Each structure stands twice: as structure tokens, then as C-alpha cells.
Image (cartoon, rainbow, N blue to C red; front, top):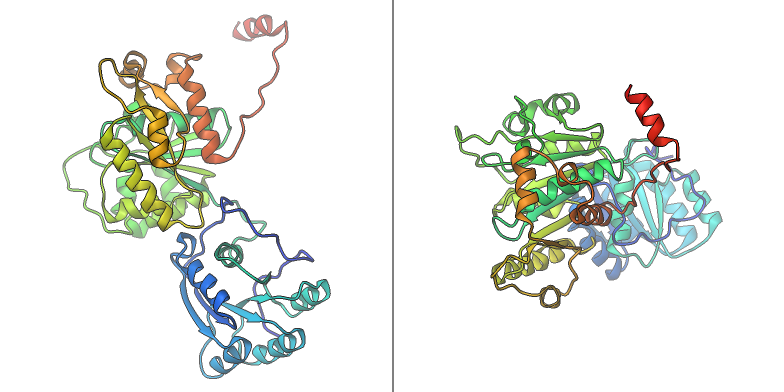
Length: 421
């Protein structure tokens, strides 16, 4: 019998996942698919282009079970084999033959058209990792392969949220920092802000932190990056919020390769439920990779023509590069600058074909005071209307609702005074 590393516990195949389901990316594994129909081959091919299988090496062949058995008579088996088969008896007999030529530890995903519990039980007994009912879509294949490497007892893989400005100076960093604050305080999620603008990042100033180490130490020492190393670099802002600060110095040039931040992001995913990336407004290989690889994206734009054009371009590129993810979100910021002609939110939404999450008004006094004091808006004014907008963004990005607060009683003020004494 094939010694597979994982067996499915349920007695029926999983229902198809919605396109916005949080699916953890697969590690660097080899996957070979043996398909019988062109439709399934096309779905597997599309799955191979999904960001969550970006590190996997996928190869597709036609011929189904017979081709797989023949191929592995003289070649080692990959980490994952995807098999398409229509017939019940041929499938079970083929699996028995495959077991004689298959290496130990290989995982098998079967795509079939027979919706029968008895067959499913028999496949599980033979050690098949997953059974997917045809016809399949790309997201079904992505979910099945990725779930092979996400054990139920393992810690949930963190969700990466990327925040980027459609244009320089639109306040994307300010929005990202306040949204992260809302995620940590109002949604009670452990979160980390990673300031990726190494030369001019402002996260340290906004959170009133001046750590001696930060993200630059990880980027320039990729061989040292692990959970313990990243933990030492984090600066604690609140009980639920940490900061991976940028050095904000110009003593070196920060030119990075396309995969420079991969090890940092992978390590953060393994330790933090939520990672907020403050991405600088520049277009390079690594910024594009960070955006495409994120689970959710927020574009911050001001209501003018250049921002509209750039937001539209970002939307089109990211939707094409992430066909199995929900589209990016965007918000309008600095709305209502005196004497400045602006594009109305309705016109903006018509051009983008999507409504903004919120439209944050231009209020330089409170935002300027917060920036100069190293505080969040919620710390400057607890009842300011923008705080509710930050919470709305946080809820949309994380898919979570606000945590219920304890009801106060008539004796609460007296109890607070006694505690203070």
C-alpha cells in the first residue's frame, strides 16, 4: 500500500470553497497531474498559475491512471500526484498497481465523477489524501493541494494584508497603521505591521517606536531568518500589535531582488494571525510580488485623475494576476480639500467598477497632530468619525466583526475609582 502522509477524515468530499476563502500557500513541492479530459487539464493548468501554488513545480500529462503507472516504473514519484479517473473498478485496481511503483511519502489526490460514500471510504482505506468530485475548477485544485500541507492541528497560517498608495503622498502609510491598530484593538487579533519602505518608512514615528533592529536586519541576512530571529526584531506597540520597523536611514541603497522578502513573509505567516504590509509607492519586482502574493489588498487613493488612472491600472493587473482571489479593495482619502477640484466618489466608482470601502475626509489638524505626537487617531480623539472608517476597513480585510465589549453597569465609575486608588 502506498505510504501517504495524510488521510482525509471526513466521509464525504468537501464542498467547493468560495473564491475568497483563506487558503494557505503550498511550500516548494513537486506536483504531477495525469488527466483524462481537456477540461480537467485546463483547470489544473489554471491552478498552477495561482499565487498559492507559486512555489510548487507543476507538470501536467494526459492519459490518467495508465500513464501515471507507466511513468513511475522508471522515474521517482513527486511529492503530490493528481489523478483523474472515471471508472470505479479501474480506479481501485489502478491504485493497487500504482502502489507497487510509488515512493513512500507521496500524496495522491484523485479527481473522479462517482459521488459514492463507499468508494470514498475505499479510497481513504488505500491511503488516498483527497478525493475531488469532477468537474473541477482551478480553486478546487488549489485548495486540495494546499490543504495537504496544512494539518488541522497546525497553527493557522497568517493572513497577509497589503496596503499601497495609488500615488505618492495619499496617506497610505497612515491608513495602514490605523487599520492595523483597529485590527489589534477592536478585533482583538494579534497583528504585525511590516514597514517595507526601508529608506523613508514612517511606522516607527507613527507608533512612537525607535527599535535598534528591524526588517532590514532580516532582509540583509536571509540565512538567519527563522521564528526566533524575527521575534527578536519585533517591537511591541500594544498587547496585540507589533512592529517590524524600517531603518529609515540613507547609509545604504535598498535595491532588492524579486524574492528578497519571501523568507520574512513566510516566517511571519507561521507566527502571526495577521500581517499588514505597508508597501511604498514604487513599482519593482518585489513590490509587485508582495501585492500579488497577499491574501487581501487595499489601495489608498486621493480623488483626482492621476489616482483614478493608477487605481484602475492596479485593479486590472491584480485581478488578472489573482483570478481565484477576491478583487482588491480601495478607499478614498483626503476627500474635501478646500478649493481643490475633485472627482466625485460616484464617478470614481463608475470608472473602477467597484465602490470604495470608505471615503475619509481631509482633516489636517487631527491627522497632523497624531503624526507629530506618534499616536493613532483613536489615541488623539476616541470618538472621531474616522475611527469607525478604519474599523470598517479592518473588518472587510479580515472578514471579522468587532469583538463584543463588556457591558458597563451603574457601579462601573465607582469601581474604576476604587481600582485607581
